[in-house]
Length: 199
Ligand SMILES: Cc1cc2nc3c(=O)[nH]c(=O)nc-3n(C[C@H](O)[C@H](O)[C@H](O)COP(=O)(O)O)c2cc1C
Image (cartoon, rainbow, N blue to C red; front, side, top):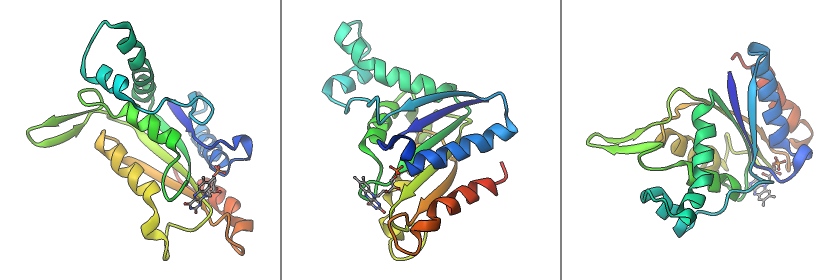
């Protein structure tokens, strides 16, 4: 069982999404003790923002050294994704959405002809047979209540991952970590939801 773990909070070990992601990995390990895990810390080792050269390298196969170098980030990120059975993504909510480091990963991974293609019947995702766990942390509460419509984190990730063929997605949350009355139990509640989940 091969796991790809994407770490996206810049808060290191204090990060709540990281702690939630750890709990998910340990839960998976109970069922698959021989886990083979690759960690991409996108907060520490950021992929570059997609630029003109990167995009040219996507659409124009070339031996040009600059284009080949530009393609490396995308090829490597896609290789890691394709070879994983399970992907665990730690996601702190930033401004109702995802960290830009995770958006940069998405921009390098969503590639026409490689991870999706256009067909006469519409778009076909080419990333098959993956299970994704999202470990989302937020200061407010977005799974229910008045802020639900502001949650562009889970909604966006489900849609963009679905676009490339990944539809088996389970979300765990630690939410309300900034809200008096909720913050004290927010992490333990999130960790408990992982503990009681049946894999
Ligand atoms: C730049 C930034 C933007 C944030 N935006 C939001 C937000 O829109 N909504 C929210 O509920 N919390 C927001 N927060 C709070 C974080 O989502 C929350 O503290 C989360 O637990 C951080 O995850 P981490 O501990 O894994 O880094 C923001 C935090 C930062 C640093």
